[in-house]
Length: 234
Image 1 (cartoon, rainbow, N blue to C red):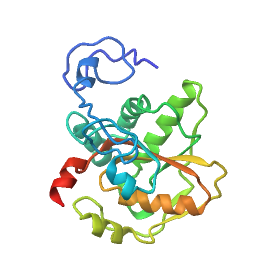
Image 2 (cartoon, one colour; image 1 turned 135 degrees about the vertical axis):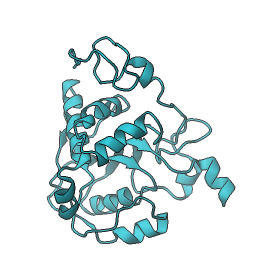
Image 3 (tube, rainbow, N blue to C red; image 1 turned 180 degrees about the horizontal axis):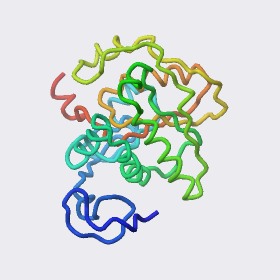
Image 4 (cartoon, rainbow, N blue to C red; image 1 turned 135 degrees about the horizontal axis):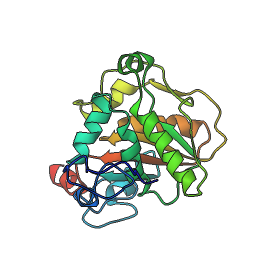
């Protein structure tokens, strides 16, 4: 759907024609496009289905789809979505993300917030991203639904930002559960940013226990070390 009332790009502030998002095509073109491993989503030297690290230490999910890294101009808008209560930005960011996904899952599951954090923030940005993705897929004739009642965060934890990978995993132990039966064998987990993947991994474990066979990850930004950086730091 075109935003007919949009006359200026939200990023560069220059006039632009009607667009699906609040950004002009020139600013969207500024978003870095780099080769990635299609499973873990981290940068690789060449685009590949499965990188060497995933062959030996695969993540709990099967495929990751993202827009780009956590860099400008995405960094500003993801930050506003998550921390400044600009929840409406999920619509525009979700449109960008939907264009990266050719085979959408019939069931989209937002990463849940604990009720205390939800009460403090008043919304879950992953819910809004999930609803936007389902809407976009359905508009394109690909049946998909978003359900934010299936995955539950049952333990309040420290924010993951700034924690090491090992501490992130320990921090989240026992934090999630599947609260409703799942009939779909193919699902997707949606979140705004994936860094170490510790949160997604633990959600995947619970989903596998519930009988899910294929798990995709939908995220605006996939950040973290590239495979080349990992190799040189070992």
